[in-house]
Image 1 (cartoon, one colour):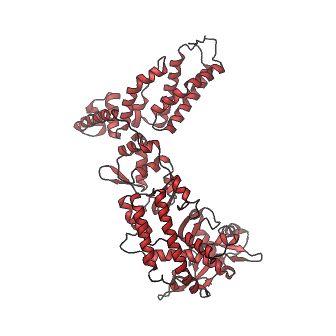
Image 2 (image 1 turned 45 degrees about the vertical axis):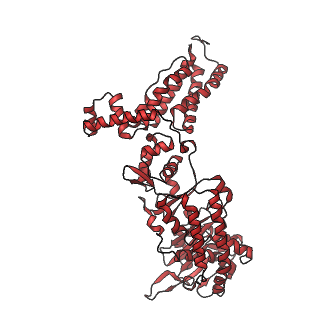
Image 3 (image 1 turned 180 degrees about the vertical axis):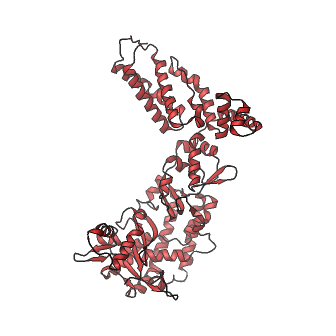
Length: 556
């Protein structure tokens, strides 16, 4: 062994050699102390950094192997102090004394560490009582008084905890989610979000995503969630409480939790089969229903205003709007409506949270409703003006050129649009930003001489009670019915899709799956068919800004 005298400092070359020698050992040490590879990498990097700084300035080192281990132990103690408070994990803060040989010391400490790790797997009350009794040296009567529970209950917890520790030390805690945690390729909501935002605001970490996933197919306790994920309950408890508070988990009898998120985790083979059925439906709809739609609206002058009288532009928005109406208007009452699955949130939101599990093979197909795919649709989105009767319908796709989807589709834009249509938005410096928003959202454009409306405008008509309703308009009231047999065909094909998908969803979600799928028409696929048939012509850049938006108003 190399010794250093008091006046000598360790030179950089030797420090580099020692760090290189101990780098792998430090990672093994960190991996044994933490719950995941990510945490192990973080801890080992801290140890390496501290060791290097110390070695460059240290004096009079004779047993450097023991000293290097001492550095690791000290960094680990600091790491635990940062992450876990005394109440939840004093167990993990027990100081481990070093020796002259790192490998020997690690082997010697394995049983102690296994014991400590099993303590961390206990539920919060078990863990608290163990700490108070064995580490704080408190008597059962003291624990009983401090926790406000009978002495007999304290004894039971101690006995049960010891039993669980013994069982845990005999088995290896290795699980799929700990080795390969899932991630979501898309998250969203169906309904109205609150002031906090969308699903991705709440499921903003891999830990939270995996908690809602592991409780999706069957309810689990905190301990069972931790067991499935290969981490200790210490890291799970607060997250579960948070997710329950915001409606993403529901507490069940027996202190179990179940996920309220509609999660799609489907195989590539099943996705491909469903995609083929979607194309069959789209082909049939484009040939048997769209010609009726075109015939009905070819003389569109009654209550419909189209920019530049471009019927092709009108058709691009009319088709997805009408297909949405057909889907919503033909839901069979035997199916539970999706509204029954909507959760009221603390921030005023009321919606179904949904997520898609990332699957590389599924992504390659390009069939999923993901932001990057051709078939992506966000919507239908309904917005209203508070200034007067004006309601908008829109969807966000990868065909239109608007950005940021639903987040940037604001009610205030339609307040400004209503004022513009009513002639109450004079163009001056005070309203420059309002006009900028209308241009940016594709609601109006400048022709070079004047500002013009860039979206289809539909007149709202009076009901018998002399009141105006957005749904009593020049389009909805004259929609042609589906040809005889076409609706039955669509429902039959959608039922086939449901049967393909059911094995990938828990039984409690089957009714919601049916509600989403009963009359499901892939609108982008229908548009693709119409483009291929030559019925639809390409859109101009200006039209891409305004397409898939329609407004319903009483303003002439």
